[in-house]
Length: 138
Image (cartoon, rainbow, N blue to C red; front, side, top):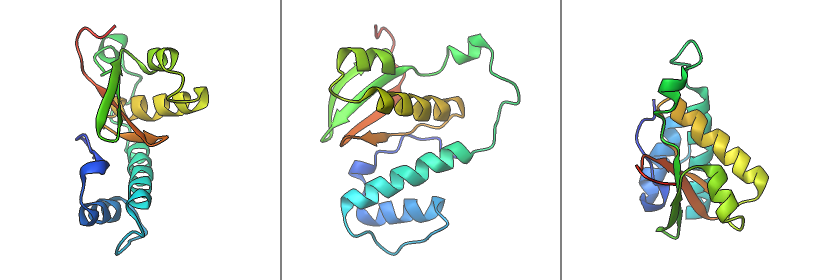
């Protein structure tokens, strides 16, 4: 199970190949370029997270669900843009970052993975998004 935060943008080329080959049935020796490597690794990690067996048989109760990280952070070119209380607040404050359908897809990917104990970094429009546990974010 994937349980650590993975930042693909700081990984070496060989590390990206190893990561991709660990989670993909189609093995590669190398990628044609860094952008392709990051895109394909993001896809394979998202697919792997969604394939994880359901750990909780029943829907989590509200008390446990509220413990999930809900704050979302955004990075561009390795520099943090901001942190918001949730994806909707981010979209409301900065609609230039994502379209509404991208925000919906991002929310589904990040929160579905979080419910399974997986931390993902999702790249959309050359920006990286991840959930964080930050007290006091409004």
